[in-house]
Figure 1 (spheres, rainbow, N blue to C red):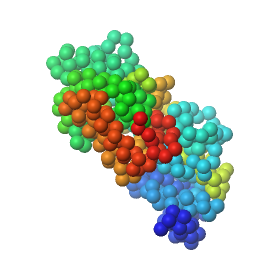
Figure 2 (figure 1 turned 180 degrees about the vertical axis):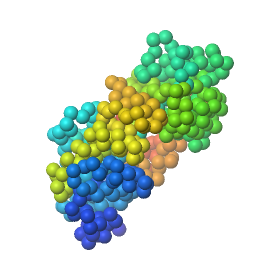
Figure 3 (figure 1 turned 120 degrees about the vertical axis):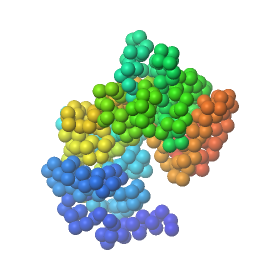
Figure 4 (figure 1 turned 60 degrees about the vertical axis):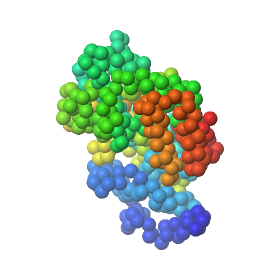
Length: 426
């Protein structure tokens, strides 16, 4: 079945009211059609704890990405629809750019929105195609005992990779062994570090400059860091466990994989931004946004709801409902879990840094997603664990990466420059 016939069929189903979630209230309520907060408890919390404070009734419906896209495309093809506001990840919106209302002139009531994410929300245009809504990320964590070994003059909230290496070197020398921990085990998220942190920090790229001289410098820098990394890291998955046992004193991981340490011993640990390299402070945010399709039935109501989602009190309620962090300046209340307060401060400092350089989650790869990740895992294992020549490995792995990109046809995403067709590997 062709795409045209598929969307035409979807439009017919839409007209017949057979899409899940339309319900009897969809015509009266503002339909918030989202790929986020899909677990039943999160959907319920969105309805009862987040959206219940809005002036008008909201019908919050969460969907998997495929049906989500099919429905909005059907409404766009039909030229009218019932969806008022769209909620989704950055990648969810990239195929809808031309059909999203410009939100540049929205009055947000003095709320300070993260500038980095606002820029992402323009989707490479000169219009605000979506407003950032919420975020998750990876951060660094440290036992407070490690802080006395920081290099002189170093700011833990603005470290460079050189300072991190100097810090871990001193820790290893002064405490009797390596104290840096890295989730390099089979279930660890090591590939996200290389994709979203190391590469953006040294190459301002994730794909195009994979084999560049700057990438070679990045891998050599990580080899330096590995000298002072707990060798058992090749079996580590969730770094909260090693922080609690004090097998490591400094670590990198996703906020969800550090939470137990922060919650169990909040007075013993700190979280802080990932380090910066020559091309900025690379980090990988999971950014969700709210957008308005051009077919929204009540544009004024849709814009009011989008504005409401960015109010500080709404952002806090969303955090409680979804465990995604705010994208606006907000003071977190004292009754939040320790992990939320500790991680939240680090995420805010990282995403709001002047040198913030986000590397987005890979998108458009389809069935090649796992193969894409494996390129970075294999590169790490060959260069760092097996000690193979950096240049030779990068040249070989670049060919594998190029074939994956060409097979998927995925265009570039940040920090790489937008591309026509498959993202090139130079």
